[in-house]
Image (cartoon, rainbow, N blue to C red; front, side, top):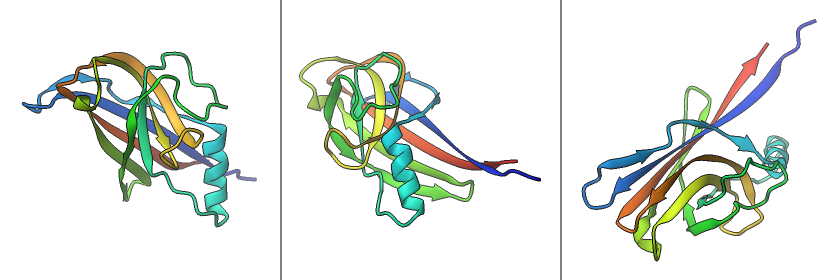
Length: 153
């Protein structure tokens, strides 16, 4: 008897960019995602007809490991940013947005990024921490987040 399963893998990449020149001054590289319990539940609800869509992203100073029961980023900074979404023929959902360092009052040590259903705490779907990067007020943080769906025999 053959057993099929579905895997959902998420990845994020953050880049700090000089706001004036556009030069990349920091890059997290691709980092594996951690889905939260609420995110997995809502994904299941979507499959059975629920109306759930990721709409926002946020950054935080969290450096501790992700806790599956988290509903917000620890040390969430900046405001929630609306995201642009796209899908590809490779079964990948991509979410992108940019955070302006000019919105900060000082340099912030970014260490986490997350996807949220709404622009309020408590709606965290997926997140991950990464090597801390300092974002100055004259820099931007460009976030690309991907959820990749694949079958495994």
